[in-house]
Image (cartoon, rainbow, N blue to C red; front, side, top):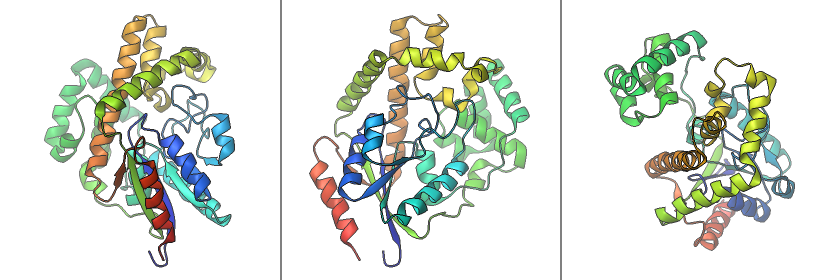
Length: 316
């Protein structure tokens, strides 16, 4: 700890209560919040992305929210640069950076660093996606298992974005993504991160929270939000709008299918809830591998969590 600056990382599966806990910690420990969420960077993704409300953002300064139009991609490398700048800005005011969100790629990137990956290549990616349409993603996952067994073991056969990226990296560099990922340098070596994971003790509780939150989003006008996004000229004119990173956010693809009359309302609702539960499962799998992360149930252990942070802040 000596000589290092402090920061908190609050993560956990979707619907675990990260926003509320981050606000409480920021108010108690003179902090500002940096979003660690790949959907919150996009303007217009408000209801479906569970973006902190205007009132919540007014309570505590937030960073890396609404910084991109939804048709403009945003990378993990850009997140690291923006997060480091935000941390320096927060510290210049004598305040505590609190990084909060569930995008594990971003969390790993700011703490462990990023591998020297090639930039995305639209031509190569289009070729991979064309093959996937012809053969199916499981076939491309099987190909990845031959090229890079290590990557295939940790990437699920139903995760097209990561399968595509792993194959793209190999096509562009001749090296596996697993090999490149081992060439990382931590970007924030001057920072001591206190890593906290929020996990309800009962999986049933989390499943119920996910369903209830999605129904609340529907009541708040989620479908109207997706209609507004679809009508944006830049998205409407895109040859494959569902390939945009913003539209890959959980729930938006399913809503798009419903608005195209490809799904009934009930089928859309269940597909969106299932996709959200699948996301939570992937997030929990990652969190369980993080051995230096302290786990708290946000519903029953908030007092213990606050004491844990207080002890961290008082250390020399």
